[in-house]
Image (tube, rainbow over all chains, first blue to last red; front, side):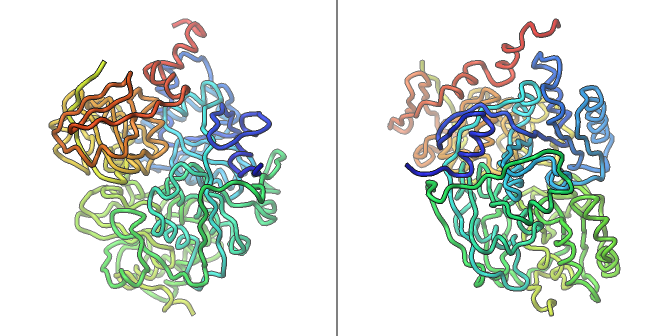
Length: 418
Length: 167
C-alpha cells in the first residue's frame, strides 16, 4: 500500500483522524484562520449566522493590507468597522495599517508552524507551504463559517510532485521557477492538487526565495503547495514561535498523480506576457518593450532579498520610468533601511510606499494610465487587474523589474550584475 | 423537472478580475451594485442584457485567480443560478456552492452551444439537453449537495445556530 502525501498527512492531523486518502472529505479544524480588508464584509455575513461569538478568537488573524493607508473615506470606514469588531470579539492577532501583507506578517510572527493547517480568505494562502504548512484559500462566507464554528469541510486533494534540480544562474530566481512551471503546464496545470516540491535546489534557496514558489502556485490552480521544511526554517521560527510543532513529510512511496522535473541550471529569466500569468516566454523574447512603470512589491516578491536584488541593479544608475517599491512588511522596510537598500533605491529615483499590497489589484498607489505598460514583480497580470483594462502588465523577477526601470524598457538584468 | 436557460458562452481561464474587477472590491457592498459590474472587463454587453434565468457556459478553469466571492455574487444577483464549465477553479467552485449557485462540470457543452442559444437542464435527473445532444451531469458529493439544498452556506449556518441567541 502506498504511503501518504503531505496533504494526506496534514489534513488527517487537522481533522483529528488517524489516516486520510485523496478523495476523502473531512471536517478540519485549522490551527489559524485569517482575513484582511475583506474582514468587514465577512463580519456582515458572520453577524447573520446567528452565532453569538467567534468560536476560537485566539486562532484568528486579521491584517489590514489591501488598501493602506485608506485611500478614500469608504476604505477608511471599512477599516474602522474591522477595528471595532476586532475589539468587540477579542481577536488575538490584529495588525493595523503599515505592518505589512498578511502572508508576510503571519510568517514573521510565526503564527503558523510546520505541519499545521491555515485557511485564509485570500487566494494566495497557498503561500504557507514555504514553511511546510498546509495553506489554502477560502471565500468570505466560508471564513464567516470558520469564525462561527472553527471548522470547515475539505476534500483531500490528489498530489503532484515537482522536483527542482541544479543551481540557478545569476539573475534567475524562484520567481522564474514559478513562471516556467506555469508556462510549461498552464494555469490549470495544478488544478485542485497538492503540489509538493522536492529536489536538491530547494535547500540552497533562501527563505525569501522559497516563499515565492508556493505563493505563486495560486496561479497554477493548486489547492496547496508544499516545500519540505529544513533546519533553515526551524532556525527562523525558533526565536519567534510560541508553541511546539511537528513537521510533516511525504512518504517516499506516496502516490503522485503527476510528476514534473525542472533543471534550474539551464533556466533563463522568464516573463509573463499580458494578460495571463501562464503566457510565459524567456525574457529575451520580450526585451525592448517600452515600460512607463515598474512595480516591485507584493506577497510574491516584496521581501528583503527582492529589494536587495533591485538595489544591486539600480545602484549608481538613474531610472528612466516610474519605479514604485512597496516593501511586503514593516520589518522588511526596516531591514532595508538599515542595510542602505532604501537609500540606494531612492537615489536611483524610486518612490517607496507603505507596506501592503499597493497597486497589485488596482486599489491605489501606482495605478497605470490607459495604454501604459507596467513591469511588475506581482503574481497576476489579468486584464484590468491594476485598475484599467486598457493597461498592459508583464510579470518578472525583481532583477528584471529593476533593470527595466533603469532602461525604460524590458531589459535582461544580467548586464547589470557583475 | 427541467428548466430552460439562455446561454452566455465564454472561453478558458476566465479569471475573477474580469468577472468582478478588484478596483470595486472594498467600495461596492450592495449585491445589486456588485451585479451591475458583472463581467465588466470580459463582456461589456453582459450586465446590460442579462436576464433572470440566464446561464454561463465556459471552458476550463472558470473563476481562476482571486478568492473574491463577489465573482459569484455579481452573477447571482444578475440572475444567473447555474454555471456550467469544463472545469472550475477550486475557490470559485466552493463560492458557488456557498452562494447557492449550482456549478456543473460538463467539458463538452461549450463546444456545441453559442451565446444566445437556449439549453434545457434537468437537475433531478442529471441531464443537459443542448443542440440536439444529451449530456450527463455527475452527481455532487453529499456534503456539497447538502449546502446547495439548504440554499447556501449562510442559510445552513442559520439553521444550525437557530435558537442559539434570541433575535
